Image 1 (cartoon, one colour):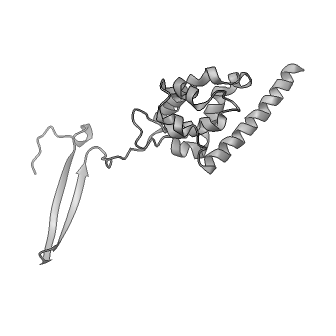
Image 2: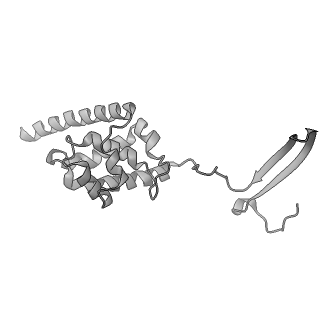
Image 3: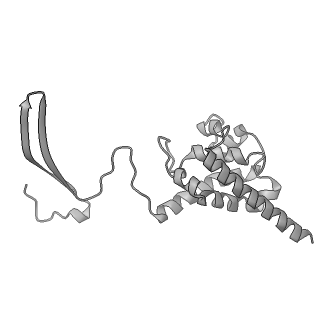
Length: 184
């Protein structure tokens, strides 16, 4: 294989080298080929796969999620108005949530798992958020028939539910303490 003198694998150029070392054919239907494959250049990702995200990319997606759920501020109960964004930041920092929130699967036009967000919203409905799934879906997506509306009717996995519930209870106790301080 011959390369031009301008070829530089570090500049986004990629090439593959296949060396067929040995071929055996004992049976026409069972041919064994031994090869060595060398890949030079950019990292390839299997179709449907994603590269690992660094902290900067995760923070950008986390900000996108916070902007997404901020569209529900009209539905936040008065006791939680000042603490709604902080609650979501703490929810997104939970290890069990962080493990699944960045894997959006086959969802289109998104960089995060909207279904998990919808399940978490289901946990917050009646405690932090007022309104029903149709109104919340219309506020988030502009359409009451979006798929996230269906997900707002279900709890997340047991691990996420218990972690968010524990966090919610801690936040609720802290809110009561702060309210007592303000009233004294």
